[in-house]
Image (cartoon, rainbow, N blue to C red; front, side):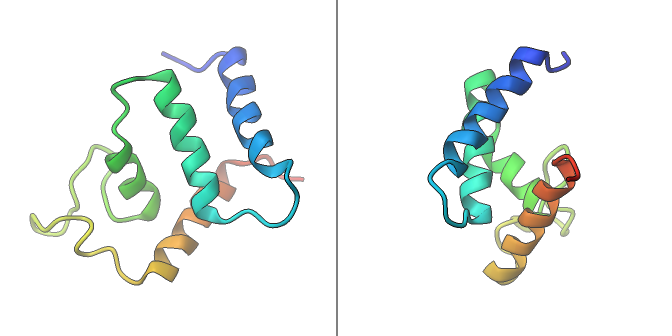
Length: 96
């Protein structure tokens, strides 16, 4: 099922509420906001799988691709995960 205009407005409202406070917003805060939106749209939303994929530690259908090891075990340093998340989120935003 494709997202509708209403869905995009709801996602924009979630992000807007996050950034309206001013100051800088961390990658983790943006990811948390997107996760909250996804949960509001689908009660069966798989948050861990989504976060792993955004962080580059899991595949699009789950799994780590690391020979059966947990994706959290092979996640690498936290600064690298945050950078991966930032890049993944920024790639989905419209260019200014």
